Length: 186
Image (cartoon, rainbow, N blue to C red; front, top):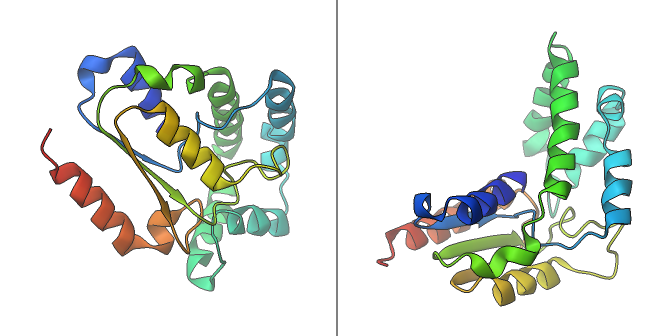
């Protein structure tokens, strides 16, 4: 999601370097008021990441999926291994700074300036976009519709039975959509 916003930013700031744009569960489209952005920054701190319990890590990881399966337990194992590294504190600080940068690097109001072909994929069961705590009245379909309305050359798809990490839950659908998009002629 943050990588999607990086791609959007690149397309805005250096359009000559972007021919096509593939975005998966991208950040940068969902609106956040300054107050909401501040609340998210306060909720995502390096200290909070460092002190997360195993149960909190499990719950946060499960939010990435429309439906949790133990086949994704390797993600939790990787996160646990990461927490035992000497550089975990630096990782936690960078993670919190990345979220803050995403909130501060507003691209939402400039999406209409991006004129390259874009593929935008969202899992219909995404529990992270929109933010379920700040935007309980909004759905992923609403954010996808905003992408459709504001990105002039975008193909926007909602992938059924998939969440934020749709490439893990529906890999064949993801691969086919991406392959088809990349093989299109401009």
